[in-house]
Length: 283
Image (cartoon, rainbow, N blue to C red):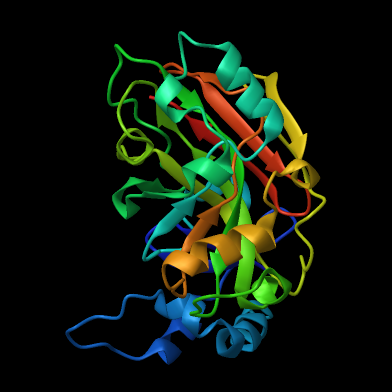
């Protein structure tokens, strides 16, 4: 199942080139009082909602996908956990480009660990990327994104995929400079999630997915998740050793070689096998 958010916070099922509005099913979520939950309520009740989505979609009027504004498919991620230099070829290019990549940040992932991105940086592909610092270089980084579906801590790699709700495309946009990664990657609009998420029952194994990113039609990044230094189950295990993964949290698994700058007016096109494609405007 491909689940998206679109326009004015509507929820839809994506089938071929159409969206089927299934927002009515969200009446099952109930209401929450203070203190509000730290998890995403829709993701938390996904097993219950999926049959309702299917039923409502049977009579919903199809809407052309090209006519809607796609938002982040997860509305309320509690945190975004990201993996730095998790492809060997990207580490190699970072070491080679001394003028671009700070020496302080060019280390293997086993040494560096993971980092967090601010949830205020999250947008959908229809919202686009706004360059906050036009006098500094901002780079594109395509990544496989993992949506956490069950709260868990100290998860073993062998059981890690059991807590996954689904997968999406992530753009981990980055301002280059000497500051800590978390700061430079948490600029507003610098975490693009979309175009929808594919539920784990349809994509049970994320270990062999080809993906590609182009800018204005020029291919810049092309790789496969089999080349990850630490694979998806290993990253979940790694992260859950340090903090509880909550429902709706997003794990960004790392970017391959080929990262490069973008400028206002550019169009980023990102594709991951078995998930889909999204176009993102830079302004």
